[in-house]
Length: 74
Picture 1: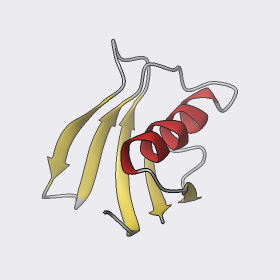
Picture 2 (picture 1 turned 135 degrees about the vertical axis):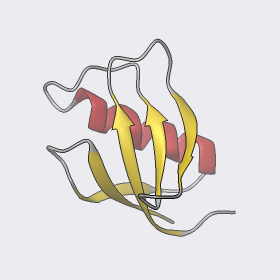
Picture 3 (picture 1 turned 45 degrees about the vertical axis):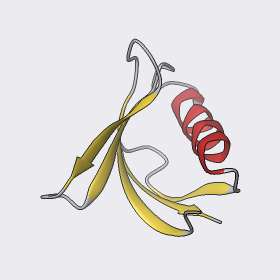
């Protein structure tokens, strides 16, 4: 499965939580999140979503208050 450190660009307040694709120019995965970007809700949803999709522990290394994040999986 997937292990490593990844750049992620989030889009909060989307209709559903899903992976939108890979932005080759920014070397980052784009992920839409249903949760709003307030009170840490989008960060919590991102971690739950990545953990559920990969079956592994995920955590945000950088970007807790930014749409661009560095996430470690594994």
